[in-house]
Length: 431
Image 1 (cartoon, rainbow, N blue to C red):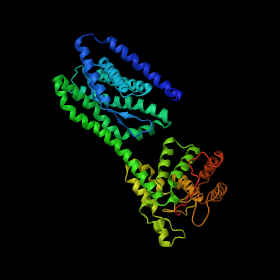
Image 2: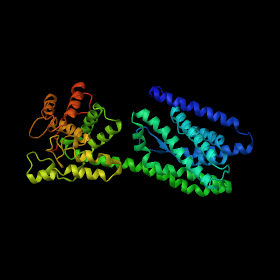
Image 3: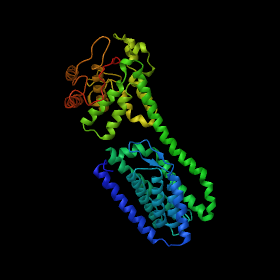
Image 4: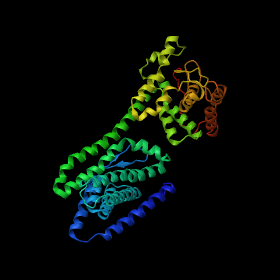
């Protein structure tokens, strides 16, 4: 835990103290009889079993989701806060340690889920008409809706905060990239828990009829995470395949990605904007995947027809990216990364501030790598020559502010020694 920033340690410690206090007080308030202890044992075991099979979200903070909240919801509706809190705390904590989690991660997960269970149980108790049947009245149905909103606010909120603190990304960016696409799945968990509670009151064994729906819900979570991971990997592999078609272009996209991210950070852009620019840089040449090697690696000048064909690649790449909703934010950046600040670029001849800032950053990063790469008709530029070329084209081809930011990065990093730029300089595709 010492490796974590102090604000993360304080946040986790605070949640643990509150959750432990709630669990202790709740246990002490429970009647000590066989029926109550049996009910507590059943729901603790159900939560433990569900938590042993988490689904990882595609997030830098390694967030996960499970379907165990359905059982926590049922306990909250049937028995109120005390059993819901104790069952959640014990079940989650045992599952975490059974999976050999790092101790502070186990405590955080148990604590945030305990606070979530306490919140949804209190909301139902406050909003319901006193009858434990969740569909007994419109008021109780409204209480279930209140549980849904509370679950999303508390559970997603607590997890988003810790991921934001660990990664340095904004709260909104973490939520958007990790929980937005699973929101509808989250909304199904509480109603499913209400159905479990309803069946439990009718006949406890009838709950087994929900085994298949529970598996389907879990699978839907899993498919969302897998879809996002596989989509991202597929597009990146396509971009890398372009570089690998010729050893002279190998790792071009990776270098442009590193340069563009460094420029964006130097310009003080929000973390979420840096991430969009970084990914767009990695995919900026995606549109070249359908072009012939003869065109891409032609050593001399293009004919007019060849030039028009080549200049289609930003449009093709942008359209490919737009086909995947997870990457649509990079559409404009890829489409316009060959625009010039003076309006003489392509495909739309945009100028100045009309060009998206991310595209202006990509233009500088892409051109710098082209200048410092080997070509069949010239040697690579030295660092000093490349910087001078950027200065010479400041205000014409390139945005002056972007050029200034990149030069500051280059000068401060003493010749790019800390940037992931290989010693070899490779041939870049014509621009």
